[in-house]
Image (tube, rainbow, N blue to C red; front, side, top):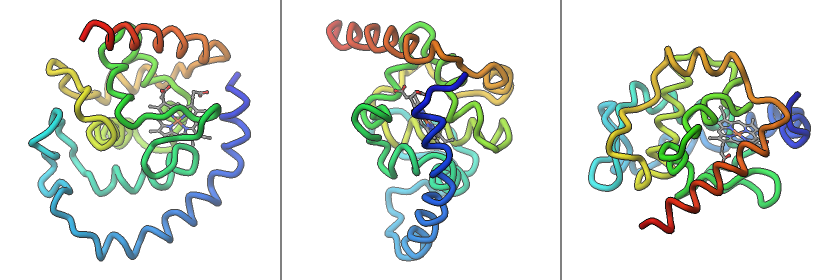
Length: 175
Ligand code: HEC
């Protein structure tokens, strides 16, 4: 069973995604791409760089499959969609966090291949929270995520998220 928020948003999403993509197309052309990746190696200079095979496709998948719920800048919606900005990569440092990220419904059920999905996930980490990517993390891998996404999280998802939240808060207080 999926969370109710997820279900209800899923219905309105395709419309939003098409509007968002249409709105975004001109900006692809006009954008000053100086801080955009050019060769698959991304944004060196702050946070951690992860290898993104196809950053343009990852961004397009974000627009089509994710931002209708999460918003373009991943700040979400209070009480409904968790904020990821400056936050999401902390999950990599807590027990169960990588598994949660591979199984959360929006990710597990995205209608894209395992390899495109891990590219999107790695892109998301670098784009929205580079500073919290642990040094030891070398990126999500298609094989591992491919297995985990086939067992999406059930109705206990919000409880699991709550315990990750506690562990992440402890990370902060250790600093
Ligand atoms: C239908 C709305 C919806 C879509 C589409 C969606 N998500 Fe989500 N996402 C949520 C909700 C709601 C949560 C909170 C957990 C839950 O209830 O499923 C969440 C949680 C997450 C989380 C965990 C963040 C946290 O702090 O718990 C990540 C990462 C994430 N989504 C990424 C994505 C990506 C990447 C996509 C696109 C492939 C996507 N989501 C598509 C609604 C959505």
